[in-house]
Length: 373
Image (cartoon, rainbow, N blue to C red; front, top):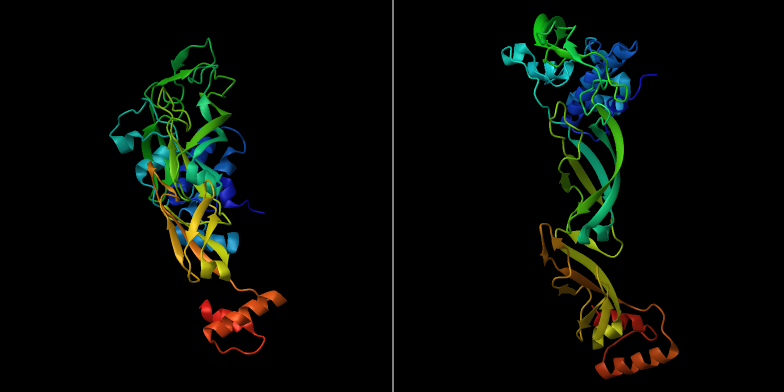
């Protein structure tokens, strides 16, 4: 049974086009047969390429999401995958570890520092955490520079030598099948990355990659006023760069949970409060909840059902300017009793006579319905 293509690329089913493209590049660099000599590498590379071929095209991806492999079996492409909208430089970059070859860059070697990949982290917040912000601890797995070889990929104590793949020129020629047909291309050497030099023995700690996967506990500072969909950038917490390049960034995408007492619209909050029909008629002081301490609300006499009260500054802090806050709008609901005691009936009957209202005998609720709207 074929593996799920999202699982093959290591992305969520909600991943966008750029996420899928970045995931494919990482996997293709890892399993390309010219780089990885493991027996299963070529099959794994074909599987990764097929997954990208399907998920990179919106129409094909839609069919796959609905019907699985059966919905896209007729669109199978060549063994190395249809690169979709990836340009020629992108293809070389994918195949050869992030370098555009001589055919795409006029023969120049690109052996300088390379910035690390950016990473994404999804973080769930409670309703009140989104309003007041604060520090959140997360577990993050990313690539860090190998401490044993200091990021060189070479076994400590070994010497550099002329690259056996390219003979020291930093470039190789090979025939490649792409969406544009088969042709011979000149590209950056995948072994030495264009430097013309290779190490005698690879570092055992990182298998010559110069970087290792490390899981760290990271403190994320959430500012007040965030909401679902807010993206936070944590500089320098992505994958480590290569050849002395800077690390990538970590992007934290926030999802905020609901609250049973409040509804949010932008920086404003909305809630409801219940009062009795007598409190509505005579007025009262009512303690209503806010996202902080309870607030004493002055309900004037004759308040109608559905009346909305505005509590200024009791809403959500404005993102980026926490001293500015929205408001809390409290809507009053008047509760009409369905059962009355004998004493209550007597008192309400007297009130009916005083007001001269005509009601059915024994049905005081109809009277209450009239006076409360």
